[in-house]
Every structure is written in C-alpha cells, then in structure tokens.
Amino acid sequence: MHINSTVLSGQGVLNDLNFLFKQHRHVIFMTDKNIINLPVVTKLIKTLLDTVHHFTLIDDIPPEPSHHDVTNLLNRMKIANADLVVGVGGGSVLDVAKLISVLCAKENQLTLEQLLAGVKPSKRCTSILIPTTAGTGSEATPNAILAIPEKSTKQGIISPVMLPDYVCLIPELTISMPNHIAASTGIDALCHLIECFTANIANPVGDNYALIGMDKLFKFLERSVNDKTDLEAKLNMLWASYYGGAAIAHSGTHLVHAMSYPLGGKYHIPHGVANAILLVPCMEFVRDAVVEKFAQAYDLLPDANLNLTNEEKSHALVGYFKDLVGRLALPTKLQELNISPEDLPYLVDSALEVKRLMNNVPKQVTKQDVLAIYQSLL
Image (cartoon, rainbow, N blue to C red):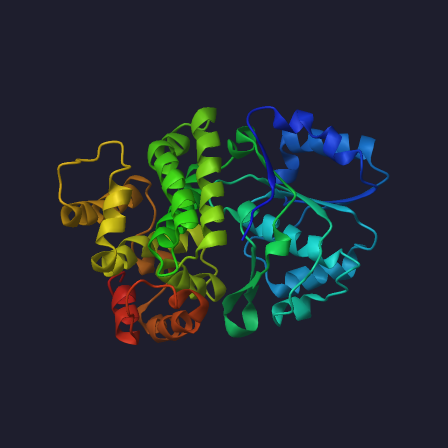
C-alpha cells in the first residue's frame, strides 16, 4: 500500500494553508465541540470563510462515533458538490472525515450501509486531515472505525482510497489536551507501533515505520504529557502517532486491539484507556514468540542496557511498559472501568470475534488464553 499524502509539519503551518483552499468551492469542515473553540481553529475557519464560495461546518462529531451518528450527520447535511473535506480533531473526527470524503464522491455513489457491508470505494474528494491528539494515527491509516451498538462492538471500514491528500502535524493544536488524554492517546500510538512490529504479517516496510515511531515515542511521550508547552515533544509525538498509523497501513495490530474493541463497543471505555489496560498482559502473552523483535524495541529505550541478552531485553521491555503505564497514572484494573467478573464471558466471546486482528497474533491464542488475560486485570 502506498501512502501518497503530503505531510506539512511544524509550528505555524496553519498560517500557510490558504494555497490549499483557493482551488476549492465547497468545503466541509469537520471537528468537535472541544476543538471548535481553540483560537487557532477559529482563525483557520475564518481563512476558509474568506476563501471558498460555500462552507459547511460540522462541529459535533462525538467520541467513539457509531454508524447511527454518521447516518444522522448525512441526513442533516448537504454533501453534494463538496470538493474538499477538512477534518480537525482526534481519531473519531478524522475517521468520520475520511468516510465523508468517500461519500461525497459522485463517482462512487455509495451509501454508508454499502461501505459497512464491504463494498470498496474507488474515489473520494480532496481531503486534509489535521490531528489534535497524538495517538490514533488515523491520518495515516486506510481505516475508519465505527461503533455498532446493536452488536456491542466496533467495525473497521478499510480502503486505501480514504488516505488523505494532505496531513498537517501542528504541535500548537495538541497543547490543550488534558494530561490523561495525552497519556492514553500516547499509549494508543505505542500499541499501534509494537503490535504492527510484532504481528505475524509484519514486513520490512511496516517495521521501518514502527522502529522510527517507537524511537520518537520512547523519547518524547512523557515529556509531552508532563509539559504542555514543550512543542518539540508535542511535534515528535505527532510524528510517532503518524508512523504508528503508517505501520498499520502496511501491517496490522493484533491482540491488544482485538481485546479492547468490546471494551469500547459495549462499555464505551475510551480507546486509549482500553489499550493501556491491556498493553502489559497482552505483551507478556506474546513475548516468547517475538523475543528478537522485543529486543530490537528495547534497544531504542533512552536508558537501555545493551549488555543484556535478547531474552533479558524482551522481559525488560514488558517491565518498561508496566512502569510507563504506572507513571502515566492510567488504569490497570478492570474494576476501575466499572467492569466486573460477570462481564468476562461477553468480553472473551466478543474479542474472539474480531478475527481480522486475532489472525495477526504472532502465536496461537485460545479462548482460555483470552479469558486468562482479562482475569489478570481483575
């Protein structure tokens, strides 16, 4: 898969986007209620209003959107003749923006129901994605994830056609994130990187993205969480997140994400938090199958002991993950998420249904294995 997006990054990039807007007549601008009030976003909207003929603002994309949310959005907005979609926000906003860019394209004449059924689009209108969290990497993935309430799970709509024309990585847009959001989205990026690196479909292209991303994340995640004004750390975390998305585009996540889907789908646990609670036990489970890969990742840690054996490094990496989640003050027990032992049978069955990701686990995984991982979190 080729990622042909043009990436613009650095401080002040928002001031230089006018040249991208001039060639378009009808722009759909998508964000959420938190982001719309940021001064830099207000300024961007004014630039668009002064530049394009027709401007449609959608500022109420919910977190963890469902297919009903997107249907409701389509019913109340006019997407006909739109020739540019701009998405500014976290993964939920960017995923919906990707879907709208496809549904806008006259050449497709597709419905959301068809996309959910697996029909592949051939075109989209021009799109610009601007992430405001450093975690999902949605701007670099061919995926859009929607909740399916009827099944209490989530579903991915996947097509390289949804990859955007332009990505803007702007550190000023991430400084408003609360610490716990910066922490959980950062762990989401880490899960993308380490899972893609160790998946049984891993490959040299995806591995290269994963290694570059982990190198940045290990150096800058805690700095970016602890100091909102550290724009160097914020920018490097945006790049770590982007590389995580690029790794997904060439490889794929596995056990952590498969087991987190039902936590989000039924219990509405934020995606980064669900991944954070599962990171350590899932990595402990796969460790013996990916010792050399874990050793490579461990060597990227700023204080890595390069004299350890690969086996020792693999254990040390899992230990680092455990300590990192603790330092970031993220949940480590299911009870903290109001989930009880009675919920486990549902969680196990639902996780095993995510075959698209379970098939990527680098070792055989049984129903009893999945149950044991969930039980370890009680």
